[in-house]
Image 1 (cartoon, rainbow, N blue to C red):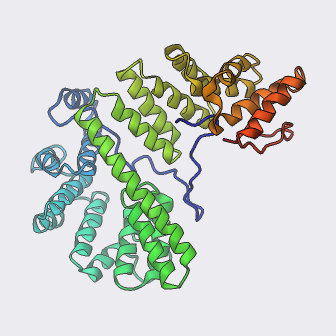
Image 2: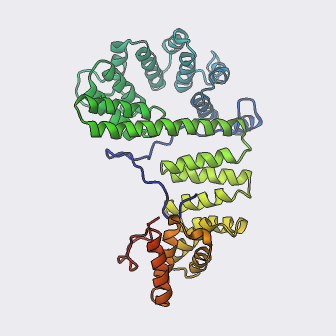
Image 3: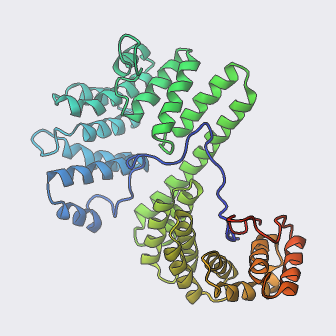
Length: 401
């Protein structure tokens, strides 16, 4: 069952870290596979080499994130061949090297990284990718020399603006037994990229350090986040693959939106729910979730528009009517009471999840119909509600349920 009024998200990262991440932390979902009509249209529309470069990086990163190594190599290797316009792109070359290493072709990957004569800015991704391979080969001192600022003063990461540099350096320190330094570096990485595909591993490093000093509580919290992100990324990857393989299907986009909601990334969730409705205009559940994403972003007008669209599709839907009515009342729109009256009249509303509806309607009627309000409040209490009938001055709408 969907949530009534208060969204079901409440799980945070702790340690002062939030879910907000740099725009590039997760590659955006592209419109199709290489050679498809969507990819061809995207390439044809690129206004310049810079546009082609950005599109190619995004598509190659997505193929890697989905584990499609063969397709990644088939797409990426021709782009960086000698004489091609994008041959000097360090990010593309690093992504191709990662695909090679992931396919067990590490020597080819290192040769690709070490043999490129590129200007310094383009060499940064090559250096980071080379360090990643060296760590996997247990060549830790070589990797550390590529990642750590010499002399031990100031910021330890040689490229502090690159999240990967912090995480790779954290791995080196952990492998060499310096768990305290590893945990500090991992925390910095998580501040920069809390939803990166390596974030679960970073939390595991933090848990190891906490266990090493006997802090079982901190270790348990870090492991909880580790497990959550492992599961979240597994589901996210599965939904992205479904959307990639079936770009016209609505349900994978709905699933992606729900996953974004779980980590309170409401703008991304809204985009996915809109994409789902573009593919299936009758998908009432996407209307509900779109309303929730907009409400939680503070866009009340947009949320009401989404709820209205959903109610038009499913006028008997109690969750839609509940959330629309509660939102309208919170905005001072008395017509919201009609939705709540409809809900409380239904036998299906006699469940704890609908407690906020009874409380919201009771508060609305407290002055004009006190006896009716008292009856509704009694039903609210029977459903497990604990808030007083009179809300605190300037307080939020009902939260129980």
